[in-house]
Image (cartoon, rainbow, N blue to C red; front, side):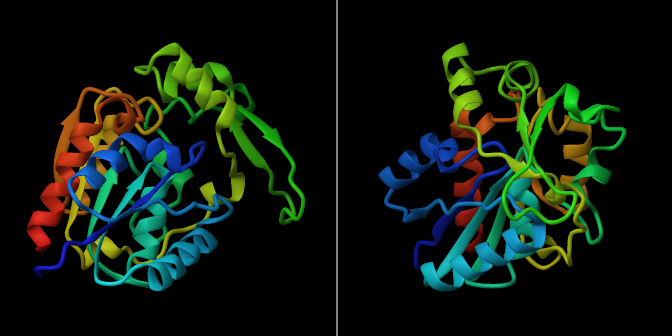
Length: 242
């Protein structure tokens, strides 16, 4: 494959495309076309269908598809549905197998989000058009500071608090479909200081998927605090499929 792949970066919950800025700019400097679509954060099936549709319509030629956090679950379900995806890169991410849910993967993992009363770490709010019983979850400021982005400067943590995009609760209980990693090569960047998806469950998922693993002493947002590690994993994926 001689054509340079397009790099598509999919953000996770409580984030938007700006969470990839440090990665995007460096890859653009190296001549890559980088696209950072919105992740709707409404439900796994709908979010994956949107990314599949985006890939089909907005990319041409080979694609390296990258997901952070919940975005990892989305790319796992989206990669085979549209576009010419050649490789997957997971960054501090969920790498679900068929029928896994975010909640089931976090259960017993030691995650700061795996608590008896979610309202101790999340703020819950309704939203127009929500399915029966669904609502949006925002990270409490203390959760951002202590368990989501604890290795970022305080000012940057407050920016996350202010600008976070909430995720629908339903997205966390939706079962994953047939995983794309069973047929596509994958790479995984694991944050050893991640308190949202603890390193133990990250390792288990990445090893199960047969991913090429890199570990970094970083929080759940390692692509922000140490973007060079994510960039290296993406470039390794590009080289392997080129």
